[in-house]
Amino acid sequence: MSEEIKVQEDTKVEETKVDNTDIKSLVDAEVSKAIKNIKVNLDSEAKSEKQKAEIEALEKQGKHSEVMQMKIAEMSAKLETYEQKNTELSRDNAVRSQLNSLNFKSDKAANMAYQDIVGSLKKDATGNWVHENGLSISDAVSSYSKDDNNAFLFSVKSCQIYKRDVNWRTTC
Figure (tube, rainbow, N blue to C red):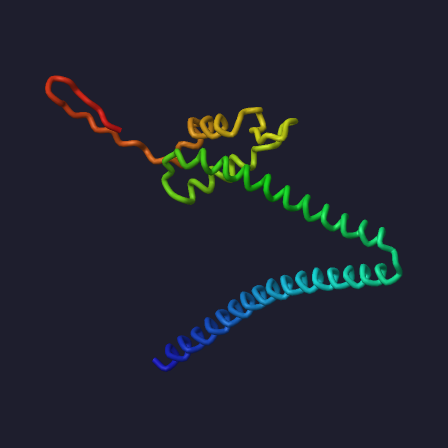
């Protein structure tokens, strides 16, 4: 009897050690992520401070045209980033508005369809978002919803058939 109790106690000690190891590894992973984010922020701040100091030094030397060139380059980079983000947001908005008209089984199903459709979109020569095969966003969403391979994402419509007066009626 005492041997069984000792074996059970040893098993509990081993499980506790394993749990502590798992917890430690999870904590280490989260700490690493947090430190990485902090390093990225510090690096960008250091770069910004270095650039500001360089601009001030050039202004003191009277090299205003070089200062303006640096500021123009910085603003151009920011503008390009904002335009890219704006383009992505407009694409996302167009896809989501088309998907809103569909009846998905769940939010996860809707997100899956969204990811599939957005992943297959590209810009055409005129700057409009189109499907890989050239369809517009609305046509691509319609085609996606009609594809039998994607039927599992959508709720099945229930229809009722009832008799009203002499005629049969349906509501879906």
